[in-house]
Length: 151
Image (cartoon, rainbow, N blue to C red; front, top):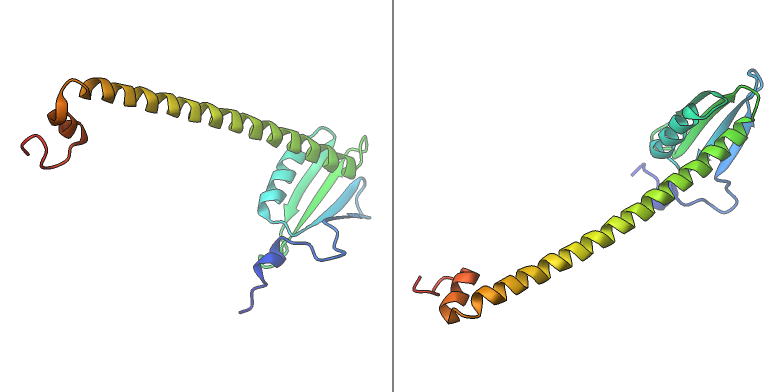
């Protein structure tokens, strides 16, 4: 088959750098960043947040070929900060943003587990209370098993 091994799509080879910067000579305050072993997910995320950053005039990404896991991001600034500073600042903001999202998710997950345990305990207590005085016939009706309660 013509496709590369799956691990080659995300594992850097020895000596490979994750990000390289190439200054664009024909444009002022403009750099191209080549991100290895990445795809549209990171390219779109970074370019969208770079466009929202102050002092960034232009930010876009492209994928050269679908089978090559490389993203090229071009960033142009107004000169107050360099394109590298804009990219680093945006990455730090995204790490903080997704860190907060992860903490909120874990908190909500813990609350959901606690609520589910409380609901299970309340349901078990309700079943015990309703089935305790009715004997075997009540137990069969609560379980819905055929052959119980004359069914």
